Image 1 (tube, rainbow, N blue to C red):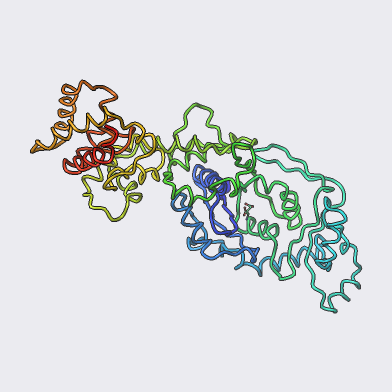
Image 2 (image 1 turned 120 degrees about the vertical axis):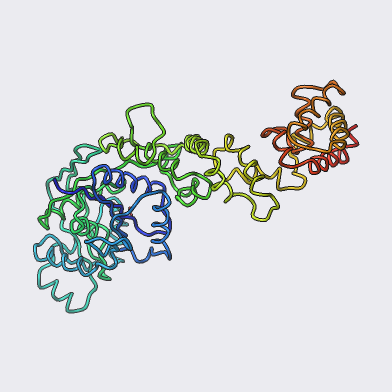
Length: 476
Ligand code: GLU
C-alpha cells in the first residue's frame, strides 16, 4: 500500500482560524494513525493578500497545538519548496502542456469587459468569449502585446463524479462549472492550478479540507484527468457554525487560535473540542488526549452536517483539563496571568492559585480572582456595598477586637476567632461568614475565606476590616 500523505495548505492571511486548526488536526490525526506524513504547504499565490509574519504565526499556532509537521517550509522534505510562490516555474510549464493539449486557452478579456459580463449576468460565470478565438486572432493579440490569462476549458456537456469520504458520491454537471482562470496575467497561478500540481508532486494521498472547496473539486478532477494523473482521495469537512447557525466568522467573536490561546484555553482542551466538532466517536466519551485521538479518530465517522462551535462546551472542557493539572502544572500556566509587579512569594502565589484551580474554566479569569490579593483594598461591587448593614459591622468590630490581641495567625486561629464572634454576637451561619468575607475580601462570594485570610496575613486582614468599619461607620 502506498504511504498515506496528508497536507494542510493554508493561505498566509495573518492568523490561524480555529476551523483551519480543525482541518489541520484531522489531516494530522489521519496521517499519524496510518504511519503516514503530515505536510504543511503555504498557498501564497494571491500576492495581494500577503501579510508580514503570517507564515511564522501559522507555524507557531500549529506548534502550540501540538501538531508535528513532517515536511514543510523550514521542516525539510523531499518534495519542496513547500511555499507556492517559490514554485511558479513548475506551474507555468504545466500550463503550457494544457494549452498544447487543448484543455486550456488564452483569454484576452479586459477587466472592464469581464465586469460588464458579470453585471449583465450576475449568476453565470465567464461567457467563454475567448474560447473560440482562431489561431490567427490569438497570434494577432499576442503580437499586439495584449495581456491575457489562461483559462481551463471545461467540457460543455456531461458531468463528473466525486467519491468523497465524508459526503459519498457527489455529481457535478459541467453546466455549473466555470472556465476557471488557471494562470493570471502576472504569470502567477491561481489556487486551483497550483493546488493540483502540488498535491500531485507532493504525492498527497488524501485531501482533507473545508467544505468551501467542494465546488472547486470538479475543476481539480478535470485537471488530474488532463495531466493523466491519479487524483488523491477527498474528504470535505463541514463548516463550523455560530450558535445561530451562521458561518463562524470574525464579526461574531474570536476565530483565531491565538485569541483562544491568550484567553487561557489549554491546547489539550482546544484540540479535544475541535476534534469532536464533526467527528463522532460513537460513545459518550468526551475527553480525549492527542494520543487517544490518534488511535480513535475515524474519517469515516466525520459528519457532513455543520458543527456548532459551542463556547460553553469549550469552557466546560477547558475546566476539566484545568482540574486535571498537577498544582505545579497549573502554577506554571496561571503565573502568566498574574500581575507582574507584586510582593507575593512563590508559596503565597501557589496557595492563591490552589484556591482557583477547581473554580475557573479559563486562565484569563485569574487576574480578576486574584484582585482580592493584589489590591490593598479590593474594590467592592454594588451588591457587596448594599449588604453592609449593622450586623456586618458588629461582626467585624468584634472580630477586629479579637484579632488584634492574637500573637500568632493562621487559618485555624482565624476560624476559632470567628467561632468566638458567633458566641459573643449571636450572629451565625451564612450571615456571619458573609460579614467576615466582606471585611477581609471585600466581596460576598468567593473561595474559602480562611485560606484567603491566611495568605493575606493578620495585618492586612485587620487593615481591611478597619477600613470597612471606617468607611461604613454611618451605617451603624
Ligand atoms: N489554500 C486553501 C485554503 O486557504 C487550501 C484549500 C485546500 O486545502 O485545498 O484553505
